[in-house]
Every structure is written in structure tokens, then in C-alpha cells.
Image (cartoon, rainbow, N blue to C red; front, side, top):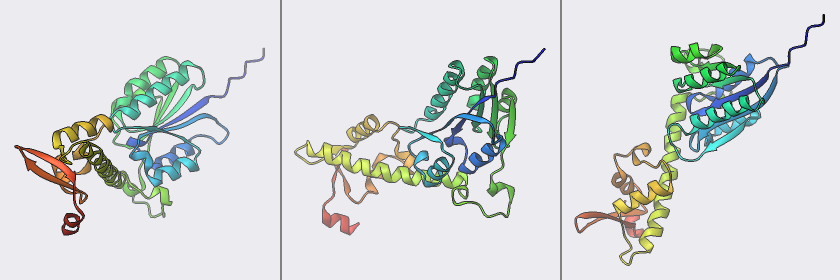
Amino acid sequence: MNQPVAAAPRIAVLVDCDNTSPEALAFALGLIPASARIVVRQAYANDVTISHQCWREALNRHAFTPLHLFGTGKNAADIALALDAFELLADGRADTFYLLTSDADFTALCRKLRTRGGNVFIVGEKKTSVMLQEACTRFHAFTPAAQSGANKPALPAQAQTKDLLDSIAQAAYAEQSKRQLIHAVTDLAGQNKTGLVGLGALGKHMTEKYQGFVAKKCGFKGLGAMVASIPQLTVQQKNGGDWVGLASKESRTAR
């Protein structure tokens, strides 16, 4: 009696860019046979991480769809990835998952996918928690070139370590936030005859308009210190409070 031929696995490769590096992507794809059927290639990150040139190059090179999560909430990308993974399994579009992450928060997702008949392979660093390693079908340990001591020259997109990515991300986020502050002061101060806006009102406006905005993420102790670092802005103390306005050309030059 002829045995039915098993269907080829439908593979989804999902990347948590906030908790892995571009060089891990090439490593993970090398684990998958060239003849395998990869039906979904998606990468998740906040707007700061995914804007890096090294990530853009890696995702474009390997034909991944970047999912840009606006704001910098800690779990924004995690939630989006988990929802998509479960939906892919429930809809029958994928039954095998390669998750690129070292984040233990995905432990519950692994258990749920496997309970529903899916296979889950985690590609993460050796520091990945034991819980996540045990929850998946198989764990593949990835060692960044910077830690392995390898002498082989890295590709441009692979040369960035996670620490460097984090520092570049903070710098990019800080510059973006400074521009947003200047625009906010221009709009709000222009509505006031004094040409000033209260520091508290400015902070409220920033957090409401730009989700996740926090001055400390830009390397400053508070909003006042951040405003003081921007030559285009000036801070005045009036009526027991701090007020922000646009600096004159003369004061910008002096600074």
C-alpha cells in the first residue's frame, strides 16, 4: 500500500530586530535547506532600529519585508510578531517557524505554537534563557563575530555589533527628537503672544504627538536639559516656571 507523501513544511522566518543583529539573519537562513519553502520573510522593529543602514541592507539583500512599528514602546515589535505568527499558523499559511531573537518573552508563543502543531526553531545568542531554549522545537546558538574572535572580514552589514547598533540608534533618535522639539516650540510658541511655551506643556505635547518620547532616551536627564542643548531654542524662567522659545540668531552664535 502506497504511503501518502508528506507535505513540505511551510516556513515563516520572523526577525525580532530589536533583539538580534543583521549578521544573525544570514546565519539563520543558512540553517534552512535551499530547497525548502519559505512562505513568509518578515522583520519587526521600532522606527529607530529599522532605520539603520545595516538593517536596511540585510533585509533588502534577503528579501524580507520590514514591519515598521512607530513609537519606541518596549514590546511593540514583540506583540506584532507574536500576533502574526499565531495568525499564520491558524490560517494554515505556515507550520514551521524560525524566530530570530534572544528575548525570553517569546517563551509563551513557542509553547502555544507547538501546542497547535507547529514547529518552532529559535536562533539566538548563547545567553538566551533556558526557558526559551526548552520551549522551542530546537534552539540554534548564534555567536556574533565580535564575540567569536573570528578573523574573517565581515560584510559591511555584518560588521555592526549590537552595542554599536544601540549607540547609533540612540544618536539617531536624539537627532530626530531634537528636530521634533524645534517644530513643536515653533508651533506652540507661535500661538502665544509672548512667543513662549511652558516646559510642562511642551513635554505633554511631545509625549502625546510622538508616542514613546522620553528625554532620557536621548541621553539627557530631563526635557529642560535637552532643550538647553539645542541652539535654536532658549529657556527662560518666569513666574516660577520654565518657558521655552525660539532663540535669536545672536544668541545661537554666542552658544
